Length: 290
Length: 290
Image (tube, rainbow over all chains, first blue to last red; front, side, top):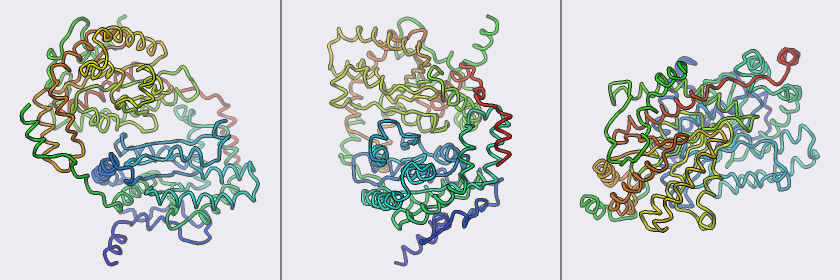
């Protein structure tokens, strides 16, 4: 018990700071401009803080990958990114996920469902995209869209939403049973900062391609989305699949925090290296003879 | 003409240095320990040389991605990595491809064909894995295995090989017609260096998972592979889809050279940013009003 407590204190600093507490919460309870558990000074030393994590992150990812090569029961990691437009899902993938060997990453961006996807249960496309053993799966959006946009745009009845919460909790418990560690991140950008970022995209011709007039339509439903996210953070925040609210007004903190969450969860897997399943001495002799 | 000549001189330094000349060649003609067109001193400044390329590589990859978003005819890049065991296909992906935003990378590792793949023409699985518009595809092995291992292990008749060369040349011309720029890299490791690397994997328990006793069996067929690769470099080296032989005995050079090949080929696409397909002033007003 003492050992496990120590591990928690020292290794889960950011996970502890960002984990959503049990019980009813509101998005507005969380400060989008905060930088909890950040060990440096601020923006200026963020590149150095990122770089400091890189070697260990790289080593642990390689252990995860090695463990998964011949073992279907080996652990998997699944980073899920949710957040409103401009909250930085893409930025996190570029800067935090980009620190890791692309061979160990299995990235899926969930768009508006295709006709085939709509013909199936909403979890069908999610199950198809689960990472293989040894891989770090990245979900850019997820099954949570089916209780967020779907709710705000009234594509299902309001009675259906609590039923889906139960279904999602059961699904995520099933994933945990399969050895998939979920890291569910809500990138929390403020109403004001979103406006700034949309204007930035409009003022810079090199960023026009990132802008979509539909983004403003969604922004006009801000309070509906806050309600929908608040319910998700309240009802789908289980012990085995907790939510993390990542303050996202400061990009340097957001990227650092998600990289750190990956690092802390990889550490917790306590991965060794697979033992040789061949005769090492014999093989050295064979190679030496060539 | 003057402009195009200048461009070639200044921008294709590594591509020019590593491109296989037309006509009959042998693998043994190329020095695995060389470092052609490397602008620095050597191993010590390689991290700085890599870092110096990163911003432009990142910018060009983003332009490629932006161009591909709504345009099925936009250019694509396809980096193909071939080479014997320990030549560093994985290392190149980790260190050179890893410099690029994972959202713009579509990586496929071709293994021993599955039953389903064997039931189809050998190009079937290749066609399925071609990158979407705007993406950089990475092939870890490729259709060349079907004229390499398949030939060495006599899985098809020797008469079939030249027929496949023609078929592959036609296929690659078809890809070029579709706007897919191929960068075909043969990572050229020496017989001696391969031995060192296999022994290193055997001596370090953290690397045992990378070792496969089958690697020695393949090593024993070294001259057969040199013949097979020499024929590939001779017969499938077309103007529109040339081969590059990347010296691979020095890992720092190998990684730098492949990153640089990507950079030079991206530059040659001369990509701008997509124009806005919405009313920019009107959208600024809409966002301002929220």
